[in-house]
Image (cartoon, rainbow, N blue to C red; front, top):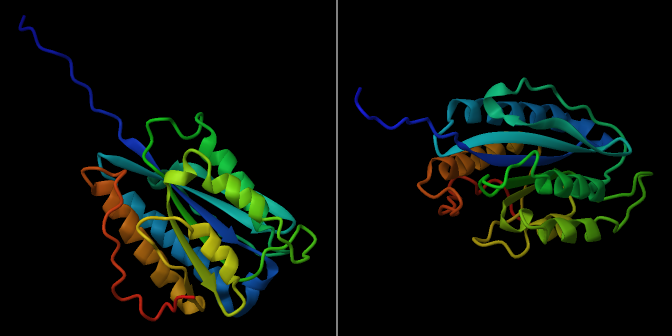
Length: 229
């Protein structure tokens, strides 16, 4: 018998995409939430079709509204997700979403140590509140804990404000200190899908890169109508 080495197909390393989605009651207005649901569903479908041997894209969706934050979509390979639309109600407890994101990112039973650096996407149409709907700064400490956590500090972060009431301060704070610098974008409900398509292209470029942990040049072409804060 010939002496041949046994070879096995290497398992692709996980690349997490975690979306923090505002589902407060105000998202029911002007078709914002249906547009967001469609955009996320399309993103997942594209990720499922674009899987690469270097990075297996997994998606999770954390929603905040209705009294707290919850894991609407558990972290799973994009190819295995059957998307369920989000529903909107209640306040904007963004701080609770930051806390849940930190817990998810730092749980090595969910995200193995060998995973590629994550991608974080924050979408909101208003000011952070406490769970009773009162304007609050209780998001600041959870955000700092998130940004200084081992994994989130290495993440590629994106943020978009929907409509004129989105809070510039919070969204900019989510992106602070990032290199390359990525601005906060804002749009009405008609621009949500365009923003998510841009994020999708940026993430898939990472997944196909020879070195997925290196951030590729960010292409802002065709985004002029998504006005920056």
